[in-house]
Length: 263
Image 1 (tube, rainbow, N blue to C red):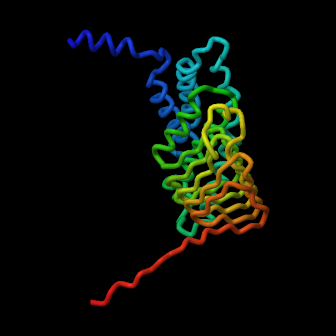
Image 2 (spheres, rainbow, N blue to C red):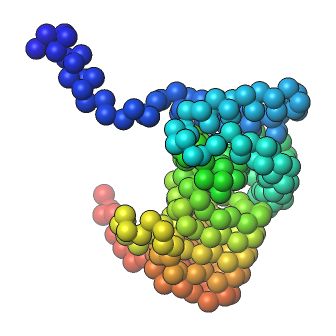
């Protein structure tokens, strides 16, 4: 097969006219700029708000290929929501600083906590998800996922404050509901019992009520599963059914210890 034949075959099989990786690159640029605008003290807010509007318009032109969806119109409404999003994120950060004995300062939380970064990008993407903006909210949270190891679908509904400690390996599904003052540790999964395209519009992921703590590597599955308020879910627990408020759920593994033979 000569070079021209290879080129022809590749071009023939590029079947998605709207698949442009510039969308991903532009989304990541927009996400970084948005984060710096809200949190970095050296970043000028007025100039960056104008820059963000320009970046968003470029993104909207790339992702809104349906003529009946005027995506650019979303920006002014989204902009009005930024102060409230920032208020929630500052509350998240304060909760981390107050409750984590490893936190030496509030600045440390903003600068180094992967859980905070993942929550920040989730909250910023969630409003775009609510507006029905295609692709961008998911690409925003996937950018944070790549950086932090924390996978929060932008469709999840999460109260304030929310604390993810250590963060790596956390998965929160699209229809999960997490109410106020919830704390989860690394490796926690809030997932679906099974994957089926027919369940697209069905609640597939659990509900976590107020003041719940979920320890490392716990797995909670199912759209009808509710963890009652003030409960503690221990490490490595596997749950597919609801538990009442004020519960303590633990996993008791069988551990066999064999004493080494004396030499």
